[in-house]
Every structure is written in C-alpha cells, then in structure tokens.
Image (cartoon, rainbow over all chains, first blue to last red; front, side, top):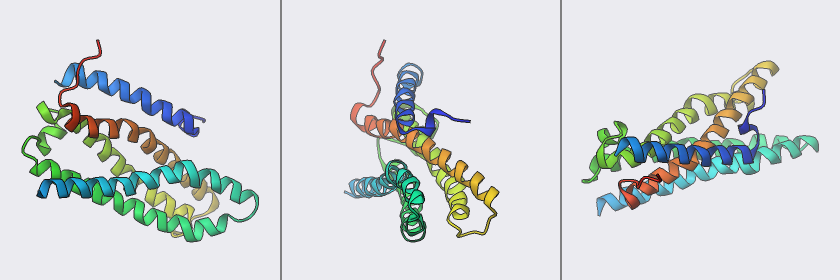
Length: 31
Length: 166
C-alpha cells in the first residue's frame, strides 16, 4: 500500500503539516 | 560554560545523525534504484551504507544522551518537566519526545532491518523484502518527524512560550 511517505515531497509536506498541528496543540493546551 | 559545551556537542551530534538521515532519504535511496539498474549497487551496499549506518546510529545515541544531559543541567529547564510537557520546558519537551521516538525508530526498526537488507544478518529474499519496507517507512517517518522536531528544539530556547496563532 502506498503512503505519503513513499515520496520525498509527501514526506516533507507531512512534516510541515505535523509542525502546524503540534504548534497549535502546544500553544493552546500546554502553556 | 559547561552547558554551552554540552549544547554545542548535542548539535554537532544531531547534525551527524539527521544529516545522514537526509543522505539516506534524499541521496542514497534514489541512487540505489539507479545503481541496481546498471549493476553497480553492490559497491554502495558493501562500502558506503555500513559506514553511513555506523555514524548514523551512534550519532543518534550521542544526540539523545547529550540532549538529556543538557535538560538535566540547565537551570531554566527540567528533564522531567520536558517529558511531562510542563511549564517552560513544554516547548522543547515536544521536540524531546519527537527525538526520542526517532531514536527508538533508529535502534528498533531501522538498524535491525537494515542488517538483514545488507546481508550483515542472514535472511531469505522474502524476509529481506519485508525488512527493506519496514526500514524504509521508519526512515521516512523519521524524516517527517525531524521537521517539527527541529522546530520545537529551536523554538524552546528562542521563543519560550509559543504565541497562539488564533
């Protein structure tokens, strides 16, 4: 089964999206 | 003075680890596909990959240990608070958790499976194919996680408490 991680750009975009999700989580729920 | 030395060495080790991670994902992976096509892949498997993996996995150990040491000794941060995501240590704690997951992936998923792929450990073709897929996905997962990991590592000391976006 193919996943976004099978392509380099899919990996980079997934990392950027995860950064935004974790930022919002950290700024709103951890401080 | 001691803290900046630990931080300096932590970053040097981190460059070694993540630099090789990017080498595997952006250079060696695509190069292997091309090398298999013209019959020159054996050179990479025999001479390059084992050396790169040696620096890669021990770079991961040095990075994690030095990072943990820094959190234990820094006056404004705490190892326990970082991993409990509490207070001023919460931001760098998110980076520390991501780095810890990546460290686990290196030693539990990537290295044992790469040993089968490279023939360091004997395996049949079906086992090798499965090991290659697991190692590949773990390596790609680490590449993805490295993006937020580095953000939270640098944002902690730089920004402290993160401002809300909305």
